[in-house]
Amino acid sequence: MDYITTLWNTFLSLIKTFRLTDALDVLLVSFIIYSAIKLVRETRAGQLVKGIIILLLVWGASNLLKLYMIKTLLTYFFQFSFIALMIVFQPEIRRALEQIGRSGISSSKNWLFGAASSERELLLQQVRRGVNAVVDAAAVLQKQKTGALIVFERQTRLGDIIDTGTVVQAIPSAPIICNIFFNKAPLHDGAMIIRDGMLHAAGCILPLTKSDKVAVELGTRHRAALGMSENSDAVVVIVSEETGQISVAVNGILTRNYTRETLKSELETLILPHNPEQGEKRQSRLPSKWRVKK
Image (cartoon, rainbow, N blue to C red; front, side, top):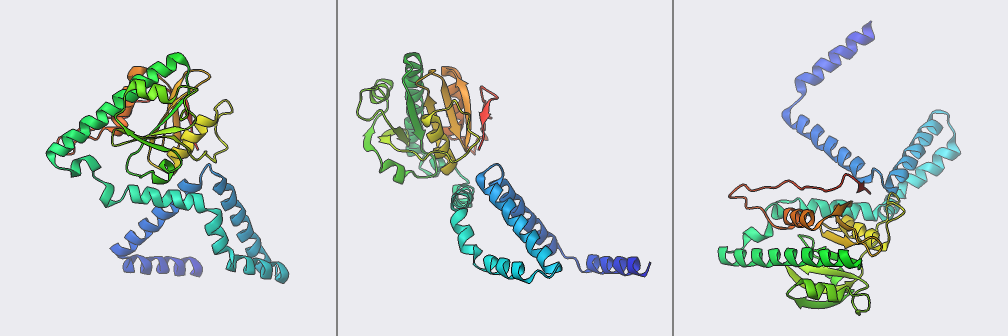
């Protein structure tokens, strides 16, 4: 009974000294822990985290049971494990930092609306022309069952990806895009990069996804599209060479079974900016519930 009374008095004293900043501190720590769990969930890092938790439990048990050899070995392991964890979790840490950078104050407003009015209108027309060209080309490639991989660059700049291909810097059109992906063209075996509505580069090499949750029937193009969307905020359009099916990869999620109309609607929603002054905001319309997650 005395123990319960003491515990209650301690709780009351903590409540009396609890400040608003303490509540903010708890919320921030909770958010960081939640973000870390969300980051490693359903990835290979999740299994590593489970292994680390098991080692911590073993270390605690060895301390209670006075297993000095095990305790000493694990103590030395944890002392030098920080650098090892930085290396092992490098992809996840990089993705987290990129997400923080994309969601920061500097990127909270769309790049297009930071420009002057006349320049903004010109850029908007250019981006819309690029979207229309890709939609028209995808419809033709779908009928021909010609494989294609088209990346729309957004806030994350893809200079390192562009360096792996050939800079074209041309006004996009359906004939040009179809010619590039013609199976005997020199640049067909790679990805096309659309930057600011312009056909910027072709024949680029994309990183493959490291996820083991990808459907078996998906080929290298789809895995490259997922890898690109995991490592950046790019929007990737894929036309399957085997089935002619059109897919879109964004933020590590692949949606499939697009038609010409649904593809145009989705690309306009994802790529064309909404005007914050007019409050225009459209919801992304996904044509299929079948998603391939990380």
